[in-house]
Image 1: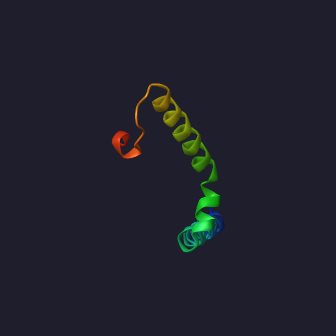
Image 2: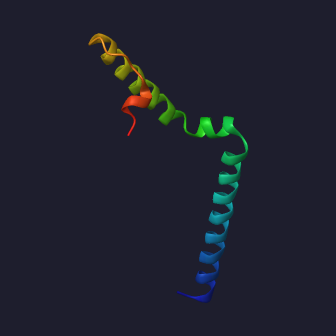
Amino acid sequence: MTQEDREEWRQDMLEESRRDELHDKYLREDYDNFTDFHSEEIKEISKLYDLLKKAHEEYGYDFELKDILL
């Protein structure tokens, strides 16, 4: 690896680090951005929540999320 290659690699790493820092800042400073970024996870957990609640109701159990969280 030449000195020029090392410098290019170093610049790439610095740019990636800056992008990561900006992304973290973006997510930490605005909850709407955070929820937008995690929208797929939120959809998935909402779907699972509904399925679990329905299963409890079908068998006559009360559904309290706090009772089943580990």
